[in-house]
Length: 205
Image (cartoon, rainbow, N blue to C red; front, side, top):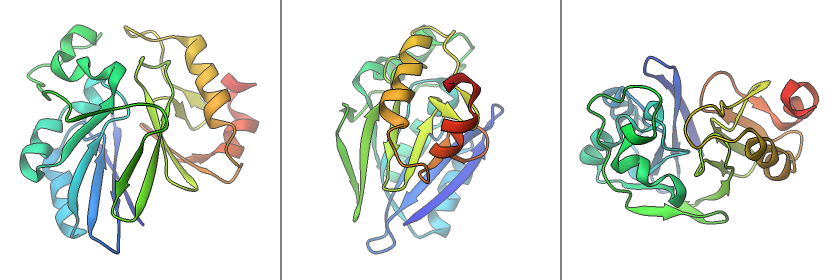
Protein backbone atom coordinates (compact mmCIF):
# COMPACT_ATOMS: atom_id res chain seq x y z
CA UNK A 1 0.00 0.00 0.00
CA UNK A 2 1.08 3.54 -0.79
CA UNK A 3 0.42 6.15 1.90
CA UNK A 4 1.69 9.65 1.20
CA UNK A 5 1.03 12.69 3.41
CA UNK A 6 1.08 16.25 2.12
CA UNK A 7 0.74 19.22 4.47
CA UNK A 8 -1.45 21.76 2.65
CA UNK A 9 -2.93 25.18 3.23
CA UNK A 10 -2.50 27.90 5.84
CA UNK A 11 -3.82 25.67 8.63
CA UNK A 12 -1.38 22.84 7.87
CA UNK A 13 -3.92 20.19 6.97
CA UNK A 14 -2.64 16.66 6.41
CA UNK A 15 -3.90 15.50 3.02
CA UNK A 16 -3.31 11.79 2.48
CA UNK A 17 -2.92 9.90 -0.76
CA UNK A 18 -3.71 6.18 -0.56
CA UNK A 19 -2.71 3.91 -3.41
CA UNK A 20 -2.96 0.26 -4.36
CA UNK A 21 0.35 -0.82 -5.84
CA UNK A 22 -1.21 -3.83 -7.59
CA UNK A 23 -3.92 -1.96 -9.50
CA UNK A 24 -2.73 1.66 -9.59
CA UNK A 25 -6.03 2.83 -8.11
CA UNK A 26 -5.84 5.62 -5.57
CA UNK A 27 -7.82 7.86 -3.25
CA UNK A 28 -7.22 11.31 -1.79
CA UNK A 29 -8.25 12.09 1.78
CA UNK A 30 -9.00 15.72 2.70
CA UNK A 31 -7.66 17.83 -0.20
CA UNK A 32 -8.10 21.07 1.71
CA UNK A 33 -5.81 23.24 -0.43
CA UNK A 34 -2.95 23.22 -2.95
CA UNK A 35 -4.70 20.94 -5.43
CA UNK A 36 -1.83 21.31 -7.92
CA UNK A 37 0.55 19.64 -5.44
CA UNK A 38 -1.97 16.87 -4.81
CA UNK A 39 -2.49 16.23 -8.50
CA UNK A 40 1.26 16.33 -9.16
CA UNK A 41 1.82 13.72 -6.45
CA UNK A 42 -0.87 11.46 -7.92
CA UNK A 43 0.92 11.72 -11.27
CA UNK A 44 4.31 10.94 -9.71
CA UNK A 45 2.85 7.89 -7.99
CA UNK A 46 1.11 6.84 -11.22
CA UNK A 47 -2.24 6.55 -9.46
CA UNK A 48 -5.73 6.76 -10.93
CA UNK A 49 -7.65 8.64 -8.25
CA UNK A 50 -11.06 7.01 -7.90
CA UNK A 51 -12.24 8.57 -4.63
CA UNK A 52 -11.97 11.77 -2.63
CA UNK A 53 -12.71 10.79 0.97
CA UNK A 54 -13.50 13.54 3.46
CA UNK A 55 -13.05 12.98 7.18
CA UNK A 56 -15.40 15.92 7.86
CA UNK A 57 -16.77 19.07 6.28
CA UNK A 58 -14.56 21.89 7.58
CA UNK A 59 -13.13 24.27 5.02
CA UNK A 60 -9.49 23.37 5.63
CA UNK A 61 -10.29 19.78 4.64
CA UNK A 62 -12.69 20.39 1.72
CA UNK A 63 -11.25 23.55 0.16
CA UNK A 64 -9.91 22.02 -3.07
CA UNK A 65 -12.38 19.17 -3.50
CA UNK A 66 -13.82 20.78 -6.62
CA UNK A 67 -10.44 21.12 -8.31
CA UNK A 68 -9.34 17.55 -7.58
CA UNK A 69 -12.71 16.15 -8.67
CA UNK A 70 -12.64 18.13 -11.92
CA UNK A 71 -9.11 16.95 -12.76
CA UNK A 72 -9.56 13.27 -11.87
CA UNK A 73 -13.27 12.45 -12.14
CA UNK A 74 -13.07 10.97 -8.64
CA UNK A 75 -16.21 10.40 -6.58
CA UNK A 76 -16.57 12.54 -3.45
CA UNK A 77 -17.44 10.61 -0.28
CA UNK A 78 -18.45 12.13 3.08
CA UNK A 79 -20.56 11.02 6.02
CA UNK A 80 -24.24 11.77 5.57
CA UNK A 81 -24.32 14.05 8.61
CA UNK A 82 -21.70 16.37 7.08
CA UNK A 83 -22.88 16.26 3.46
CA UNK A 84 -24.65 19.62 3.77
CA UNK A 85 -21.34 21.28 4.55
CA UNK A 86 -20.21 20.65 0.98
CA UNK A 87 -23.22 22.41 -0.49
CA UNK A 88 -23.11 25.43 1.84
CA UNK A 89 -19.75 25.55 3.67
CA UNK A 90 -20.26 29.04 5.04
CA UNK A 91 -23.39 28.11 6.96
CA UNK A 92 -21.47 25.68 9.17
CA UNK A 93 -18.15 27.50 9.52
CA UNK A 94 -16.88 29.84 12.21
CA UNK A 95 -14.22 30.99 9.73
CA UNK A 96 -14.54 32.73 6.33
CA UNK A 97 -14.71 30.22 3.48
CA UNK A 98 -14.22 32.55 0.52
CA UNK A 99 -15.11 30.99 -2.81
CA UNK A 100 -15.06 27.36 -1.65
CA UNK A 101 -17.82 25.50 -3.51
CA UNK A 102 -17.20 21.76 -3.34
CA UNK A 103 -20.69 20.82 -4.57
CA UNK A 104 -22.73 17.74 -3.75
CA UNK A 105 -21.25 14.49 -2.49
CA UNK A 106 -21.38 11.58 -4.93
CA UNK A 107 -21.89 9.11 -2.08
CA UNK A 108 -22.70 9.55 1.59
CA UNK A 109 -21.12 7.28 4.14
CA UNK A 110 -22.31 5.53 7.29
CA UNK A 111 -20.51 3.76 10.12
CA UNK A 112 -19.24 0.37 8.98
CA UNK A 113 -19.19 1.13 5.25
CA UNK A 114 -16.26 -0.20 3.24
CA UNK A 115 -14.47 1.63 0.45
CA UNK A 116 -12.43 -0.48 -1.95
CA UNK A 117 -9.37 1.22 -3.39
CA UNK A 118 -8.04 -1.49 -5.64
CA UNK A 119 -7.21 -4.37 -3.29
CA UNK A 120 -7.22 -2.06 -0.24
CA UNK A 121 -10.31 -2.14 1.96
CA UNK A 122 -11.00 0.99 3.99
CA UNK A 123 -13.55 0.75 6.79
CA UNK A 124 -15.49 3.84 7.83
CA UNK A 125 -15.66 4.60 11.56
CA UNK A 126 -18.18 7.29 12.51
CA UNK A 127 -16.63 9.46 15.23
CA UNK A 128 -18.91 12.44 15.87
CA UNK A 129 -17.78 15.25 18.12
CA UNK A 130 -15.58 17.58 16.09
CA UNK A 131 -18.47 17.65 13.63
CA UNK A 132 -21.63 15.51 13.58
CA UNK A 133 -20.38 13.58 10.55
CA UNK A 134 -16.72 13.20 11.46
CA UNK A 135 -15.19 9.88 10.44
CA UNK A 136 -11.95 7.97 10.83
CA UNK A 137 -10.62 5.47 8.31
CA UNK A 138 -9.49 2.00 9.34
CA UNK A 139 -6.88 0.64 6.93
CA UNK A 140 -5.58 -2.45 8.70
CA UNK A 141 -2.92 -1.32 11.14
CA UNK A 142 -3.45 2.35 10.28
CA UNK A 143 -6.12 4.83 11.35
CA UNK A 144 -6.58 8.12 9.53
CA UNK A 145 -8.26 10.13 12.27
CA UNK A 146 -9.06 13.50 10.70
CA UNK A 147 -9.70 16.07 13.42
CA UNK A 148 -11.01 13.51 15.90
CA UNK A 149 -7.70 12.44 17.46
CA UNK A 150 -4.31 14.14 17.27
CA UNK A 151 -0.94 13.23 18.75
CA UNK A 152 -1.54 13.85 22.46
CA UNK A 153 -4.52 16.07 21.73
CA UNK A 154 -8.06 16.00 20.32
CA UNK A 155 -10.12 17.99 17.87
CA UNK A 156 -11.84 21.24 18.78
CA UNK A 157 -15.49 21.08 19.75
CA UNK A 158 -16.34 24.79 19.89
CA UNK A 159 -17.31 25.08 16.22
CA UNK A 160 -20.96 24.73 15.10
CA UNK A 161 -22.11 21.12 15.59
CA UNK A 162 -19.26 20.20 17.92
CA UNK A 163 -19.69 18.19 21.12
CA UNK A 164 -16.93 17.48 23.62
CA UNK A 165 -18.87 14.60 25.17
CA UNK A 166 -19.50 12.98 21.79
CA UNK A 167 -15.85 13.39 20.79
CA UNK A 168 -14.47 11.76 23.92
CA UNK A 169 -16.99 8.93 23.66
CA UNK A 170 -16.10 8.41 20.00
CA UNK A 171 -12.40 8.14 20.76
CA UNK A 172 -12.77 5.86 23.76
CA UNK A 173 -15.44 3.59 22.29
CA UNK A 174 -14.32 3.40 18.66
CA UNK A 175 -10.59 4.18 18.49
CA UNK A 176 -9.00 3.05 21.74
CA UNK A 177 -10.34 -0.46 21.07
CA UNK A 178 -7.59 -0.86 18.45
CA UNK A 179 -4.24 -2.47 19.37
CA UNK A 180 -1.49 -0.27 20.80
CA UNK A 181 0.65 -0.60 17.68
CA UNK A 182 -2.04 0.83 15.40
CA UNK A 183 -0.76 3.96 13.66
CA UNK A 184 -2.65 7.23 14.12
CA UNK A 185 -2.47 9.61 11.17
CA UNK A 186 -4.35 12.80 12.11
CA UNK A 187 -5.71 15.74 10.16
CA UNK A 188 -3.02 18.05 11.57
CA UNK A 189 0.39 17.51 13.13
CA UNK A 190 2.59 14.43 13.54
CA UNK A 191 1.55 10.80 13.51
CA UNK A 192 1.25 8.70 16.66
CA UNK A 193 -0.01 5.30 17.81
CA UNK A 194 -3.06 4.20 19.73
CA UNK A 195 -0.78 3.00 22.54
CA UNK A 196 0.85 6.41 22.84
CA UNK A 197 -2.52 8.13 22.96
CA UNK A 198 -3.86 5.65 25.48
CA UNK A 199 -0.94 6.36 27.82
CA UNK A 200 -0.07 10.01 27.25
CA UNK A 201 -3.02 11.91 25.76
CA UNK A 202 -4.13 14.20 28.63
CA UNK A 203 -7.71 14.37 27.33
CA UNK A 204 -8.14 10.59 27.60
CA UNK A 205 -6.96 9.99 31.14
